[in-house]
Image 1 (tube, helix red, strand yellow):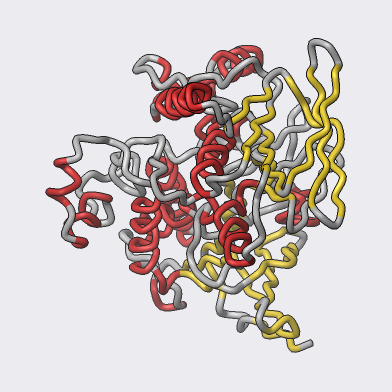
Image 2: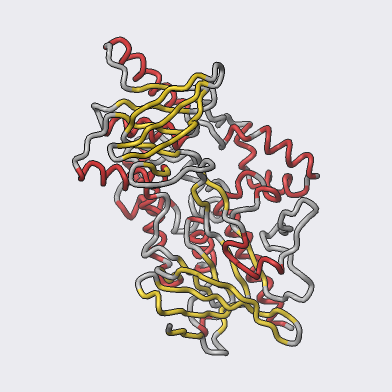
Length: 441
């Protein structure tokens, strides 16, 4: 194996692991402050992304799906409305500004917002190395203090090549990973919804018929998957399995939405633990296991129309759960339990889609032994400052920042787009301030 090390005097001020929307917003904020990828740039920054190019939930870019946050909560506007990285500037450059305004909507198509992300990412491409899969992070000690981190990454296209970069600060934003029910096994016939479009396209190209598909889950992604499969396979029965009585509408009313205000992060951060738990429980309906009311009503209309026509392809198997999923040569045999009676129904189907959400990656998954340097509270949660910096042991001079995985300290917006721009501004300001203090010593 070939290992390439950065030169001893070539130390990054910041290395970011992962390059989704959170780090894209941070890259823009730092770029606008004059940061660059090279030693002579004043503030040296680089982001490492294992994907070969920018991509964000590509498997769920359904043609007519819209964003669930306002376009004004883009990468920059809440931080700096004058930035030319805004969604409106993107629309102007694409020649669609007037057309978009004529739509009278705050919520762009998801595919359009992804194109906006790609447009912005291309403008800070010099700060990112794609195809860099981080495999280890190790502390570098001098005079008994951890002053730097060595970050080793591997190019998936050339796994024998290992590159090691040294940095004063790590910023981790590796996103979420698919959550699966216990015992679930993924295959060509059983997917997580994050792969929906790719898997459906493969199935269509293969020419294999789909007679029945089962979707497990009660949230927005589950409902979207049900709707998409119903439209894509016009001869198939689509079964939606979930433990609730019906889909729960998302609460996007004005007062409830205040939980996503930047000021709400301050209030949540300073609140005692029991208040944080209460706020989280009260406002889960703004984000978790809920569905846009328009989609709920559309699916309901479809079900009624099919009843009138005497051919019901859309089937809601509510108050139910999957008891067993057994694959065989011709498809998948699914056993569904109706919870009130315990009755079991066995379905022969061709596809199973687990629309069962996502979960944060543990810091140990991202940082390995570095995680041992991080301090934890009495509930074994990471201690994180208001500026999103992880509290570390006294002998650690190098810094670690987190974007995501901070719901216990910063509230529901930890993994959402709502405060992406504001959070990027807070982290950028903290990074530059701490760097100036270090340089002054």
